[in-house]
Length: 115
Image (cartoon, helix red, strand yellow):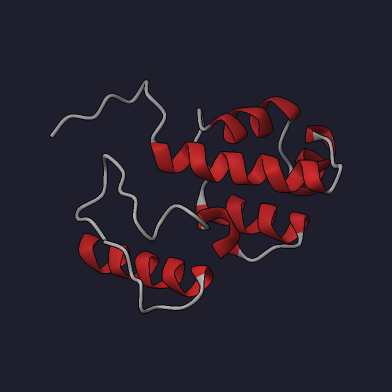
């Protein structure tokens, strides 16, 4: 299977939008966030737009700088959505209470599907 690497993945756009939403809610500039995580203004901007994927370590650093759990970035996404790179679809989980728990289940299921 061939992927078009010029089109941002929906997951990258979602995570970037969540970074931007939280940063703006804290009234933090891109420069300030960048200083906390050793990135430039432009790199933060590309991450927020989903143009550049955020690596695991950098996402952890951003979560710490924004004082939020990692699951925040995937709220509203992982429970029922798939990406072009995903192995399978995780459907709705109506009996699982709490968005954070649904996100953790979806993340673990996705990790096992890739193994």
